[in-house]
Length: 88
Image (cartoon, rainbow, N blue to C red; front, side):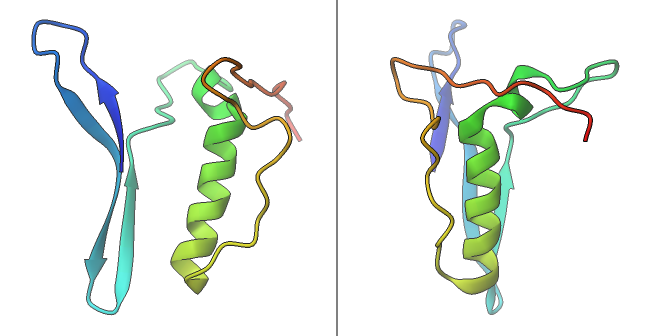
């Protein structure tokens, strides 16, 4: 599970990604990647980490394993990684 810190007066950590078992399957939820009216390719969608997470979690949900590699431009704590938007 990953968290976002609420920097207002609550100072709480809120889950932004989680998985639950449902019957014989799993459900993944992500609060990352909101797209607001008028936005085209906002930073959250362009993040190499977000894009990689979506692919890897989809693979894991479907097969129970992950083979999709972590790309060289995956962000770190010291180095964000926003990819250039394309319309392809």
